[in-house]
Length: 88
Image (cartoon, rainbow, N blue to C red; front, side):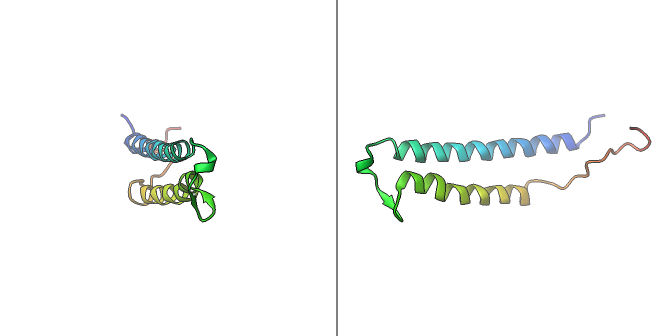
């Protein structure tokens, strides 16, 4: 009999990988999309290049909030010990 915790663990792993992929795409588009031009033409936000500000300064808190929401609402608490009594 397959342990039902594996289904939840696989779901949680896919959610975590999806969140990482979304963050990487955000970072890549902001860093290389905005930062690929001539540095003389960069726009600045709070004294930082726009590409850096959006990829690192804005992206990190966004992914942190997204991960907190995922863990809080989608992940489930599961015991990690064996369900089978007497078998080791």
